[in-house]
Image (cartoon, rainbow, N blue to C red; front, side):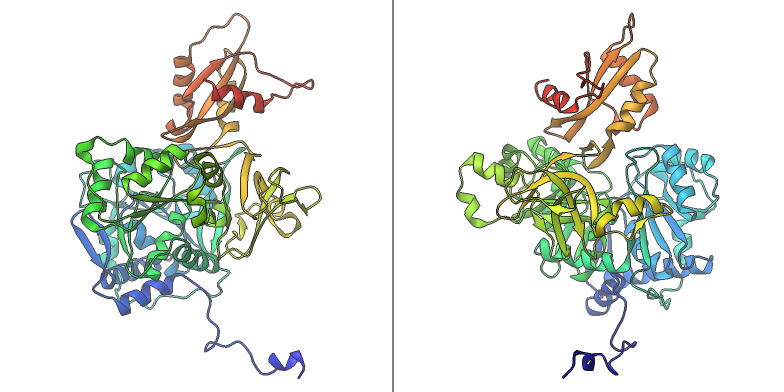
Length: 542
């Protein structure tokens, strides 16, 4: 029989082919487990029945106000129920969800609103000051919806004429929401940190969101009805797609407005949390909490971290405290984590140094990612798996972004040769596990936030007393990494470290500011290029 026979008269139709989307996960859980708790927030307990109904109300209300396929709805929200509802309600209109980083300054937020052509903005009162400035700077004039958290007393100015609950009340809980026309349709828009100039808008599609959401369930070994604590900001890559993962297994979202040790321990103990994700700062907060703030854990809790691999001492302390830590890796462009340091039982018996070397690696691809490798970016040839030869880490698969919004040149560069170029440099070990050795774009990952060293350097260069500056990552037990600035002063100028830090605070978001300032002549090559590898070595000894 010819191969063509398997295609003849066997066509795609509505009965046998539907676009992949994570929206169906919520519909299924609401049907199957309507009374199971979907969201906990303060004293609020929202069932799957109500979660689904409120998401449909939001979709209905947005549709009535003109939101349609391709329209952007931005949200400036903490880890609260409306953020979860937006992850379903917005794409139920075929609109695109843009979650804003609550730590950014007004200028960047204004750029984002304009670039995304935001039609509606839902904003928490806690962020009203910066959002008021951003809206004043922005060219777009979206409908502004204010959210006042009923569980926490948060002061702030109302920026619009419509309250979030009033918007929800407008909607139909039985709204016949829309599946995407195509699984390639955009579901969300996430902005990078902006390594040079303005940030880039990373576009996710329904297919990738669905596959990564299920990939998380597989990778984190979630059984039915897991309990997930939101220590990871949901604005980060849509909460690494866990915003959708939990609905696939009818899990419970435990919202956490502020990441504080007492609240984390209380939530873990009271709600029997099974899983949480976070940057090294979350581990530090848990471990360094005063004893009165700590509570016994109900069982071993699975903790997933990204950014720089945690030191062996931190991993040991977390294990002793009752947390099993797994290191993940990825980028905004890969829907969050797409690489996991899949731990092998035999490694538990290695000597501490050897075990630490294993834990320092990023690992292997998610099951949801089709291919991961390291190549010479010039020849596009795979480097040998010798743990020594450095190349660029590259991804290929369905959990790679559609591309950068309105930036054809950047998209083409990122996808050169049929692979996504991560910009990270690393090696492949003989067993196939990869390890990052450097970041070609000199990104500093601090507390889970990406900081562009170039942006910080540009700010330093604007100071009248600074002749030259370079910024590198300095290891930090609490934050993972922090910016370390090396400054060369102009002849006759004088400046203190505190004055440099104050200058940066006046021109940058607080988390981007250097924590360490060193005055020195910058080491340069014969062509005048600053030798950052030498600065990194110097930063280790400070």
